View 1 (tube, rainbow, N blue to C red):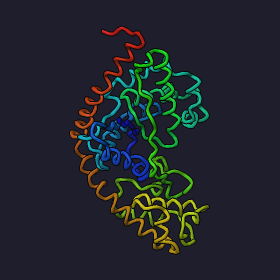
View 2 (view 1 turned 135 degrees about the vertical axis):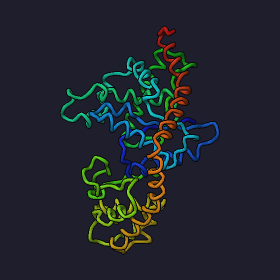
View 3 (view 1 turned 60 degrees about the vertical axis):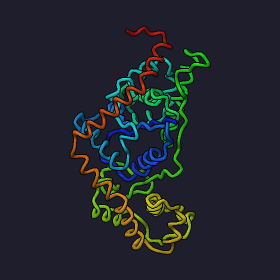
View 4 (view 1 turned 45 degrees about the horizontal axis):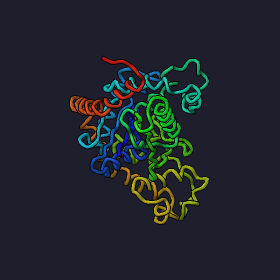
Length: 338
């Protein structure tokens, strides 16, 4: 089993990132059987598909390494690297561009969402982004890829590209690419804004009060939870009572996700209570969970030399793992290499 997943190095990780993806990465790493492995990469090449500040991308990449390690990713047990140090990602993307089809890319909903009304003014990189995503996982013969609802379509595209390439250029008993299966973690919580229970928690929200950052100190966490939007009604005793109450649903969901309880278990304890009692309890469990992460992150962030070394070691390992796939791809396409 080989798990491959990536995250853009945008910096400023928040609670939604941790509960929705990173915590599950750590769990997969810790439960991986002998002979299996996890590869986690910082998608810095994907980041340049949109307008960006080069200095922020560089610093964000190093900060993301620090954050991932602080959250529990162990570079000695998982392969942790950034795309830019493994040229085979873009090399394979180009080789797969001959197999990918315009019609497939035109159906990608994320391009429509990110390009908005200015599709003609969008970068070619944004349009071909899903082919690079396919290369990201096919390069390493990934057997499984963790995906959220917004990435299922891209993994299906990767499978389509792999299948077509194998059909067009390989014999049935010697395919080049493994078709990866999705992993949809059942406990992946959908964390919403503290100011609007109908919007996802996001670093792009102009209000700092809308999110809990992984680097927030205890006082800041308590303050944000205290000021989080809620309603005047008491909490119900079971989950169905949260219907039509998005802010209440969000706060209870966060508590359940952090403690590992079900929503009904949380409500079994707090049902009938108001938010005056529930919010302090939520703040306490958040501080207890995030304080060690925040402390380790600050220590790691200041040691740039160690962060560079982590990425360099991970990239060397990734290049080694991906090299046979690149060689087979060139061979299958009939390309002559020195």
